[in-house]
Image (cartoon, rainbow over all chains, first blue to last red):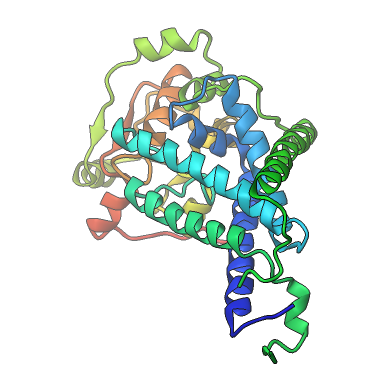
Length: 152
Length: 185
């Protein structure tokens, strides 16, 4: 496998950072499902029956996909899944903004409210990182233990 | 940068990724449900809003009737609070999550977080219920925080007659130069 320049380092750094973000977010939400359910409900999109389902399943999903992002085999699929989730969340944020709703994203814990536009910007950045990883999943973590200079 | 991507078609990749997503969602639902079942206080499978939840913990019956019957919120500025405090006993309750109370609170305030109202109230029941006509001031993080109002409503359903909200909450207290008391470990 040819590795050119330091592009492999960029992929590795983005993979680790993105995985860390989702792992942290998932773990924080698992510890306080009630607050996270309040955050989900604040978007006023889901009925009362679906709010707990999302509140219970999203934290382990984020943790699982964050870990999968570190796996060479599943990095691309994990990046795809996380991109989809981030896109859904962006749509929810935009609709909340347009409706003038005061939302608490609950992203990193129950009291992590922020201006909606800041949340949109942050998630666009995360989405961009995930797209980058989806298109460049090919540098395995084990490559960092090999000599990374292209001798071609 | 894409030298080692296998030469499969985009459609094959997409199908594989979609299947992975569906499987991940299903597995997470199972894992999340199991974790919930194992919790001491599982999340109910039908969402209950903050207001209904705290009123239920306060022992209210039909929470819709309780909410509609409550008097308009009585608010109090920091200056009013300081004046009243200098004249006599005022019970101050901090409706923010306990971690924030520990990091800094209005001197003399007790922690009665909205999110753990039931168990926190039980811990201070004897102190609070000595005189249900005594003045109680509840505060939250800021003017936009609704937890103070929710705690106030829950106290009113428990029979407390004089409960006010501190306008602007902790933010207003700090802006007015109020001292901060930190919880001792």
